[in-house]
Amino acid sequence: MLPFALFIATLVVISIVHWVYSWRNPRCNGKLPPGSMGWPLVGETLQFFSPNTSSDIPPFVKERVERYGPIFRTNLVGRPVIVSADSDLNHFVFQQEGQLFKSWYPDTFTEIFGKQNVGSLHGFMYKYLKNMVLNLFGVESLKKMLPEVEQAASRNLKMWSGQDTVELKEATASMIFDLTAKKLISYDPEKSSENLRVNFIAFIQGLISFPLDIPGTAYHKCLQGRKKAMRMLKNMLEERRAKPKKLQTDFFDYVLEELQREDTILTEAIALDLMFVLLFASFETTSLALTLATKLLVDHPLVLKELTEEHEAILRNRESLDSGLTWKEYKSMKFTFQFINETVRLANIVPGIFRKALSDITFKDYTIPAGWAVMVCPPAVHLNPARYENPLDFNPWRWEGIELTSASKHFMAFGGGMRFCVGTDFTKMQMAVFLHCLVTKYRWQPIKGGDIVRTPGLQFPNGFHIQITQKNKQDQDQDQDPSSLPTNKKLSSNLDDEYASHLY
Image 1 (cartoon, rainbow, N blue to C red):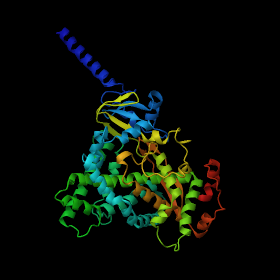
Image 2: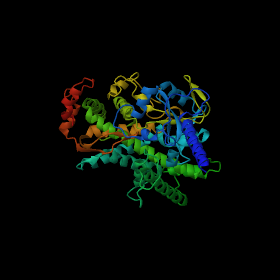
Image 3: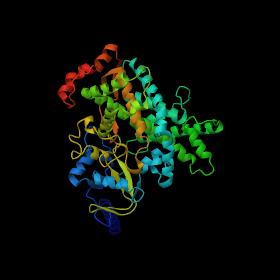
Image 4: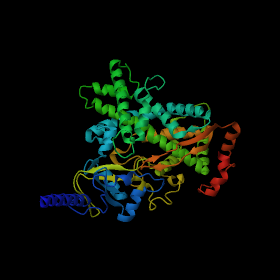
């Protein structure tokens, strides 16, 4: 009996050793990039999600790039992944989408955003949905939306200036959500019996967390928030079906028309997932970028000076000070767009963009096996000293004379390739208009918070609490006096400190 037990135990040990060996040394028809697959089942997931306060390339990526080079292998949430900090491979991946690669995200992300979400669809269906969204966020639609965006920013800033402090991340998220929800589904939080956004808050808190679906975990709360939000959207859709409107008033009406067409390829599930993703993407990332932008202005008064001068000039050149922003004025904000580019470059709100290899692919002597994921790492691109001088410095003037209309090998804050974010222009417009209203009419000072943590996405765990006060006539005259501030564009910390009290 004992020999038999020893035989079974030996078989078990051999099987475990073989399994661990196979996990750590996956098969490949060529040469795999160097790296480590971590522990069986979990891989290096825990290290990837480990919080850090660095403004540099995420430690998970930076440490491995230093050890293995800009292309390395790992395992995240049970899936083999090639991580790319190589601009050439990144460009190749985006250019070959639909041929050698397709969009892919871990199963946990698909569970969160829906199996029919736009990021998981391919080919004609993806192009079809993209064109639908462009109907909402195209240039002509944005021109019509500009006054509403300005009114929302002005109204909220005036309200916040009457409060002792305001937590900017939450406040801007609420402002943008209300505006976007109104355009998408005519949602009015004051008239609705349910709070739609509270479900998105629960969703966001667990979005970038370890995928453990157990009651009490952030991931579980995230899934519950999605279920409740989707139920509300489904109820709204059914109500709209029961009482259709004669004229299109929002994106929901447009979606309903598409659903009712005989030759439609749109399904209710796809439509609802699309609504969910649009609501999330429109406010969460933009509010993070605006919060970081405002914090950066606090830290860099000379940038604020240049930004204020640009927007004060817009007001001075108007025939009537009471008139609202025009599209021509918006497009004239050259330094503002430089400022936005530099803000999102350092923000790195999206820490990774995933694709999946459709066949064995050879690149720079390495083989990417079919079925493996590739994670393009934007922070490694945006913080590359070979491309950006002093990459951790905040310097909007580095973008002077550079016009970005799409992603490039060295800038992918809004995605890349055929999946370049269709809401990019909407995001930039919201940021530019908010900044216009802020710097021309208000002053602000930080009260508390503003600490940044990445897990690996950008977060403000303590918020960013500021006090906003309306400028008086003397303040505005001083801001417009070109002799009242230095004109040196170099970001000297000494000059920043010297003029900080003046500007705030």
